[in-house]
Amino acid sequence: MNTLSTDLTHITSEAQYNEILKTQENVMICCGRMGPMCIPVYGEMEELESEYTNVKFYDMLFDLPDAHVIRNLKECSGFMGIPFTIYYKNGQVVKATSSIQSRKQITEILNEKFGK
Amino acid sequence: MENKNFDIIIIGGGPAGLTAGIYLSRAKVNVLIVNEGISGGQMVLTHQIANYPGFENISGYALSKTMEKQAKAFGCNILSNVNLTKVSLNNEIKKVEINSKDIYTSKAVIIATGGKSRELGVIGEKDFAGKGVSYCATCDGDFFQNKEIFVVGGGNSALEEAVSLTQYASKVTIIHEFDYFQANNHAIEEAKKNSKIDFILNSTITGFYGEESLKRATVKNLKTGEEIDKNIDGVFIFIGYVPQSEFFKEQITTNSRREIIVDKNLTTNIPGVFAAGDVIEKRYRQITTAVSDGTVAALNAIEFIQK
Ligand SMILES: Cc1cc2nc3c(=O)[nH]c(=O)nc-3n(C[C@H](O)[C@H](O)[C@H](O)COP(=O)(O)OP(=O)(O)OC[C@H]3O[C@@H](n4cnc5c(N)ncnc54)[C@H](O)[C@@H]3O)c2cc1C
Image 1 (cartoon, rainbow over the protein chains, first blue to last red):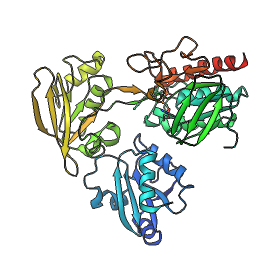
Image 2 (cartoon, each protein chain N blue to C red; image 1 turned 45 degrees about the horizontal axis):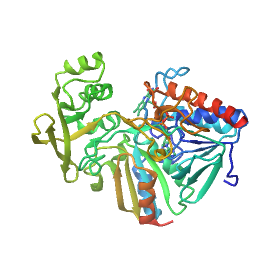
Image 3 (tube, each protein chain N blue to C red; image 1 turned 180 degrees about the vertical axis):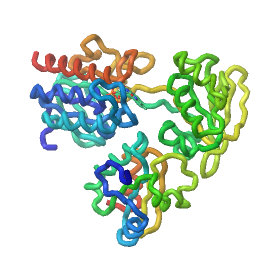
Image 4 (cartoon, chains in turn blue, red; image 1 turned 45 degrees about the vertical axis):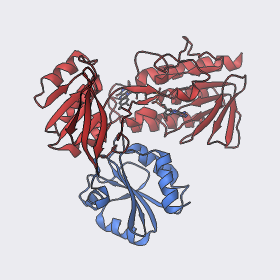
């Protein structure tokens, strides 16, 4: 298995990740497993996708070797809980969170960093 | 959603609420489920379910999706990820306000808001969640390879998860507020015979400290009042659950544990208001019992609106 079973677009390689960050302005990536703390975040993202058309939503399997691009981000250095959720503007990390997040927490970040 | 008047509104979309939704919509009752989270409730937090009859083993996510699909197929309306802002239950027509703007009405309401993990409620707990403080061993255990961790709690979850965490951690110390455990004997024996597990009893954690991630916790002896500072990399908290009845407390009668009091028909103190699942006063909180409550509440609610 190299993708998560969600309805989000999956990132499966470092090359795809780099291409997305190069070409997309506002990006949210949730990197996790199909576990209890991760699934609710994917669920929120699936529903927010149609509401925030200015943001591209992706997931990435935490255990993929290429997921080192997220696991090793300096913004995630203190993280000890999955999923790692990263928000990028023009390829730069503008916010990173670890573990489960509520819809309120996610939308606050989306509104603050990307607007609607 | 254009139509705002329903026969029955269900608050909560876990197994109790979804089951009620299936029964009601199948009986051609005009029903709406309003749910704060995504459909499935605590089931979504459950990695593998092995005790739900009909499925040898199923992920909580898959079971949630199936129940939701089944309810929708019968015509059940579901609003997920909404914020319940007001309820008025005392009158014949019940009103439920969502996101501070939309008001939905119904002749009966079923409260199926379930429960959530209890937090310690101490300094630093929120700041270090996901950065050393965790409520899920299967999710975060592998971040603590060869590290020392605490497990807080004395019930089955705490003791069983402490044993499972020894596959990663170099040492696991169980911190528990009493000098006896509420877990069953098997769980206690398994924890006691594990050479990586230690115990600090009659104690609790009073604070979490660190920088980027958790580095220290203060542990207080509840008998002597003595407080000590311990260097620690991770703390897993399993101290039970709280019923989500707070929102209804002005109108609905609860017991001292905040569980909603119901009669055998799952009626609350208000006619036309039923409650089901983990939020009610009962002994066993499982998916099977939530599903059973959802059925009973739905059938009694149908009888109520047809009177
Ligand atoms: C980690 C874990 C593992 C478990 N494993 C098992 C198992 O293997 N087998 C088993 O049988 N049981 C298991 N359980 C227990 C089981 O999940 C619960 O007993 C069951 O989900 C309770 O169902 P419920 O519908 O009453 O409530 P919940 O599942 O808690 O659902 C309640 C829903 O109501 C929503 N809600 C809450 N407040 C509001 C509000 N104000 N407005 C709108 N919506 C609201 C919540 O967001 C949630 O979606 C487990 C529980 C946990 C936490």
